[in-house]
Length: 245
Ligand SMILES: Cc1cc2nc3c(=O)[nH]c(=O)nc-3n(C[C@H](O)[C@H](O)[C@H](O)COP(=O)(O)O)c2cc1C
Figure 1 (tube, helix red, strand yellow):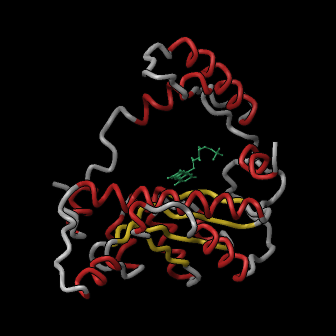
Figure 2 (cartoon, rainbow, N blue to C red; figure 1 turned 60 degrees about the horizontal axis):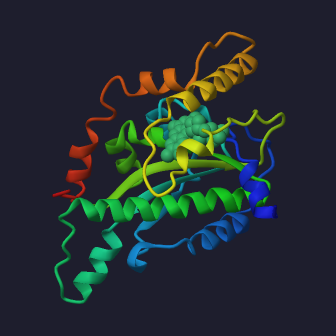
Figure 3 (cartoon, protein in one colour; figure 1 turned 180 degrees about the vertical axis):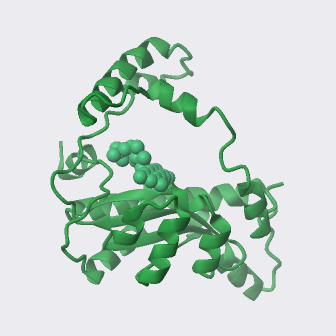
């Protein structure tokens, strides 16, 4: 293999950090490398807010389901879909930008995700570990107010980073590639492979919780999708100026 693949294959979310500080220079080296991620039409439609203010951290942790690592991680970043900058630029060119369709939201969301995963990987290449925080979408209005996000800027997820505290958690095995990779046409027959995968995930949780958690991937997905998820987001995002026609 090679070093990049090795780092990727070693990924696990890190939620506990050692006391070692993360140098700001390193953070900026990571972010500027990550900016080289591909970007739809060169739009670079994302922003990241680094939150160092402890009071703001505390509030963000609270509004993210009281996840303590949001407050405690050495570094906390909020990744935002951002068309505000493009609005400035296009207007400067004496054109009224048209962000009316769902495609505008997809473009900026995809761009942000590609940038963010580059950040995670670059951080891991420095021996850092981290975890995404989708829970900042629990109360997006409050998060937006804390960070003073203007129109056309939507907080998508946060990311905690820091040097991992030992012992690091075990890795969570992913689905077999055979259900992810389809050759030439989509293969709908996946349940046999998933049943075997469920057994592995069940064993993972039994081991991780000393037998207390009896769970598997199918059960987790069924719980997750048994009700609508964050059904207030459409209104919030529309309020930010995305019409999603
Ligand atoms: C967009 C996104 C949002 C996430 N939000 C949270 C979160 O709010 N809290 C958390 O503890 N983990 C969060 N995670 C981490 C996932 O739970 C984790 O990546 C997944 O369970 C796989 O585990 P692994 O990263 O250790 O391999 C998030 C991951 C992603 C990609």
